[in-house]
Amino acid sequence: MTDVTHQKWWGWGVEGIAFHHEDKPHFAPFVLDKIGIDLSQPGTPPPDFDDIDVPAPRLGEDLQTALRSAVGDHHVITDDMDRVVHTYGKGMRDLVWVRAGHLPRIPDVVVYPANEAEVQAVVDLTVASNAVLIPFGGGSNISGSLTPPAHEDRTIVSLDMGRMNQVLEIDEGSGLARIQAGGLGPDIEAQLNPRGWTMGHQPDSFKHSTLGGWIATRSSGMQSDRYGDISDITRGFRVVQPGKVLVLRPLPSTSTGPSVREMILGSEGRLGVITEAWVNVHRLPENREVIAYLFPNWAAGLGAMRDICTSDASPSITRVSDANETGFSLATRKESNSLSGKLGPLVFDLLEKRGWDLEKVCISYIGYEGGSAKVRADKAIVGKTIGKHGGIKLGKGPGALYDQKKFDTPYIRDFLLDRGAVGDVSETAAPWEKLGEVYHRTIRAANGAFAEIGVKGYIMCHLSHSYHSGACLYFTFGFPPNPDGDFLTQYDVVKTAIQQAFIDGGGTLSHHHGVGTDHAPWMEQDISVAGVDQMVGLLKAVDPSRNLNPGSLIPPHREW
Image (cartoon, rainbow, N blue to C red):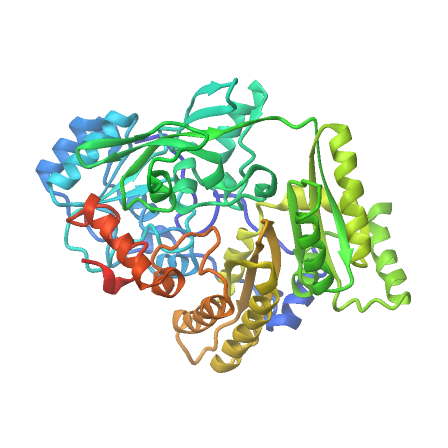
């Protein structure tokens, strides 16, 4: 057996870590009020794995023998648990299906290569056998990029990159590091930090996602305002394709025709297997802190984020939650007997006396990094801008709490699923002048979908990842399905309404979660039919027999 660790087969993260509400006195009343779920009633735990009917592997003796010869006997796995772990990502549909034992097609074998030569051997053997190969990083994808096609008759090989997790070298003079694609976020930082460096890339999935996965889905991190998203960070890479290796050197810029680098970014395994990448790294900042602010309403928060983005300040995080998400955040606080904990209610009482509508207030988090002089200058500019828009400073305490809990939110989805409820996310990006329209259109669409299926639902949003011309809007929604209808059918009604609202409002179908199978139906609306034509031509040129992760990235009717 391999020593690569994986997430739970039925949910997010590792065994022993879960969301609990008993120490959060406001959470149960909030959930009861907003979506009608009584948390005093126990949830239904996931089934025992032994109760799941796992299909037998469809793996010919010749291919199995060849794979064992390529990577070693102990790194070719056909046991049921490993194959199920590699069947789905962590999207809502994935979790519903795996808990229900819905396994129409799962990988027949999981292979763990140790180096690029072994990856090349596995890719070539898979293609020569006309089998299907699906690259696997941390398994955190939530858009269906890992799901094998249900009607695929060919052998399916899951290529797990978990053994390839090393920082291979650091070019200190250029601020570049060469890192193997299977490195998880914490593992990468644990190797860089002692030498004084950081990538600065921290997506929500940071603890359970890999460098290769970030590149393959065009990931963005919470600190991308300072460090850039993964497409900015990644300067070069090596990609194993059938019979060859695509090599791009880590150049700062180039004028050599259409960007092959951009073709690989976001390709979701359909153009080959990323084995390593050269990425930008930065010296660890002298100072780092996150400060919380409060705005009287959503419009004020949006206006402040836009002005901060176009100012001389360069914070690492610019985030503001709408009133619904602010209410949710306050409901997840633990009870505190400290002075700072008691000051929160006093501040809100004071604001109410000043005429603030506490049902509309919006909390914001701004991150600062760098030398003392830079941090002071950034704080001064940001503070003045926030004051101009009617906001106030709450301080470091709430900001530190955000920093501590920033990777915990996905566990709430499993908690709700245990109680038969949907909890999911969708995100988009749009120009500043269209953000308001996208936001309001999406809220209306979601509430209309809740009404259509006859449920009590809740949707909330925050702005993050600011750019010169616009920003990302990240929506979270939840509802208990109508018992008279199908769970996933109702989910699809809401998810479809939200995704279509993005496109109709002038946004993109996804800012950083990728395409997979869940978002593929909107690709022709997003990048035009001609754009998908060009993408299909590229995929066909590299993979004419559809051996590399077929079904992901393009609409089903465009598969050849």
